Image (cartoon, rainbow, N blue to C red):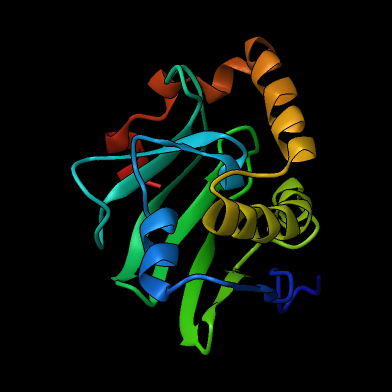
Length: 181
C-alpha cells in the first residue's frame, strides 16, 4: 500500500464450470438457501437481488451476518456486483464482482475483488476466501454438492457459530443500516 493508493491490487479468481451459463447464474444468485460456496451462509435481501438492494450473508439460523453489502450491478446471466463488508472487521466495504461467460462446453466463472483496503483483515480474508469460493462453487454446480472435505469443514464452522462475535449479530446489521454503509 502506498499513500497514493490505499487499495490492494485487483484480484481475479477464475475457473471453468462444465455447465450452461443459465445454471451457473441460477446457483450464484440463490437467496434463502444454504450456499456452501459462501461458507455455508444464506443470502438474504429485501425482496429480490437487484441494483440498490441491500444483501447479507447470514447463518442458517439467521442469528449472525458475516458479510453485508449493496447490489451495484445485476445483469443476468453475465454480471453481478455488490459492495462487501465483513461484519467482524472495522474495515470499509470493498467490491466483489462475479462475471460469467458462456464458453464451449460450459461457463467461464470469475470472482473479481476491487477497492479492497490494503493491509487489512478484509484483504487477508478475501485472499484466502477467493480460491475456496470458486473451487467450491464449481463442485456445487457440477456435482450438486461440495466434496467431503469441504462438507466436513463447513460442519465444523457451523459448530463454531456460538463463538461468533456479538458485533456480527443480525440485529446489528439490519437492511436499513446496510443501505447506509
